Image 1 (cartoon, rainbow, N blue to C red):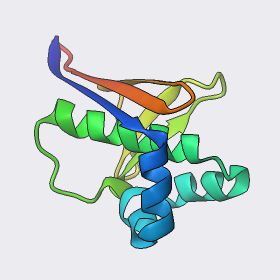
Image 2: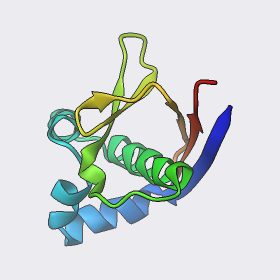
Image 3: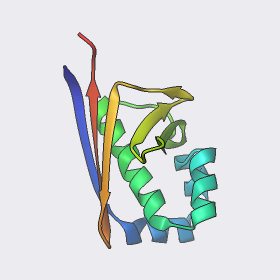
Length: 114
């Protein structure tokens, strides 16, 4: 049963501008693992896609009173994204991320077991 759906689309350039002008944004919105991967790859699309996914998750949950850095978007060995919230893998949230040259989009579906 679907309990919530969230979607977010954003400009990659917008995230680039925020990263350049607001250094605190990184620690507030991204986990240690996400930041390590970003710094290793130096890929702003990676950050933008994670931010969009987190925003979609918050929308699917309808309410989330914690910093976005407590939500992690990681990838399994096949590259499929999965969600970790406060160090716990959440099998009830499914995420899909896509991007083009200028934009990223993410969907999140919150399900429940009957």
